[in-house]
Image (cartoon, rainbow, N blue to C red; front, side):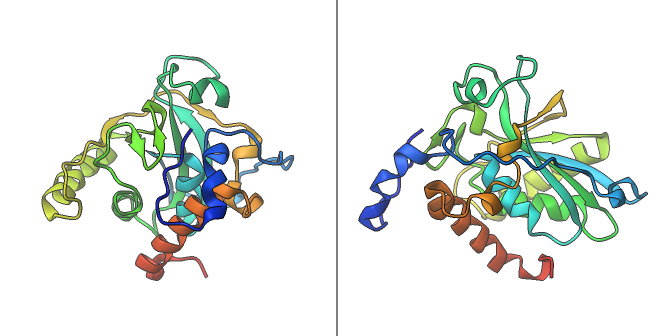
Length: 218
């Protein structure tokens, strides 16, 4: 993967060797366990793809009412894909984040608002220097209510002028979902000094934090 950054200090010249498709991060052995609160009556699930899942995970982990975010793969034709297979662009899978959230605190509409502000939904199969169908902008809805809200808010966002070009976000029924390898989980938190995190994930999170500061966890 290439990372195109035009206005950064010379040290970031090495970034193309440390993009999202590189597998050089330290492994994380801790198991991901669901909080008991995930089973409460207000819990719902959303699944979004918006480029590298390290970014999507880190953005939504910041939000009040989000119980858990898990990086994974969905939308392809290969069972139990590996990260290497997905990065090849031949599986049809997108890198996605599955989000468990408390509907009494944050709504699906608010999650969609964050989604459309936190990445460029007008670039087909690309986010910045990350290119391929695995980085497509996609909403996998879990029920008809989510479908109707996604379609309506996509149209409203498209006509609002938020982005100068038409939104190309795919909206599809949720397919079989596969959790990503353990070392991808909580990636920014576990690898804050990884070059891609320093240059791309971290700045994106800070931008979202400023824009949605009223929604941040304390």
